[in-house]
Length: 359
Image (tube, rainbow, N blue to C red; front, side, top):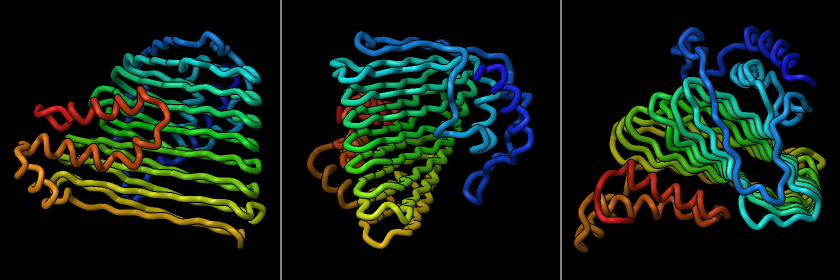
């Protein structure tokens, strides 16, 4: 389907849909005249020696993330002007990651279709910088026996607005990991959808939030099981300071056909001062009767005893706080299979928490 045809259909859907608000997240500030101004996105792709990468003007999109998912997904499809396709050929083991670097200048929309063919293996790192309105959709299709890792880093300037949806569909005997690291933007709304669709398929979703000033993060994860003997895990960890806020939604959804599925969901937030706030909303919808589905959620302040202990050993408060934050993130970062993403998290901890001894 041509992008021009998608644009027309999507714009009508955008105008008909309500704002995706909740009691935790308000979008009353949204003003089309302010955010739908002229803009541009520069996208550079590196490290794709064994991977087929191309920008196209037509294709099958929306299979995992439909146009009518919510108002700002429709906006994404309405304003999209090209599609970035990333194809890992059958049997290829890519030694270097594919780096997709986007720079936003006022407004930008990035749509990625990733196909990991049978028995292929590779990594994709998406990094976004700049300022303005940014929408992103990633649709990843992982074939039998493939192994793919996708890491996304949000380093947009403060004041930017982000609407993102990412989805992974994995067939049998495949492994995949989806990572979102959220640092930039004043407002971020994102959803990860993971769908293990074949026996022994394994998908892992990891999201890390580091908020400060008055940033607002509305982050969702949906583990959708519809096949037996599949496994999916999702972990969201947020550290918040100043007046920042994180809303974390998690859903484990196991259909009747997904017997012997194994699912785990965790949502944890650390508040560094009284002005920060987090809301954790986990949910389980289990239709099968032979499954393992568990979840855990916590929201709380930094442990004063840990802070006191580290300071009594000669660290200043900033350095002690950094160590505690790194330790808090460790259960998530230790699972991330892409080194560049882990390093970016540690770097942003340094920048957000201020000067002090290195972590």
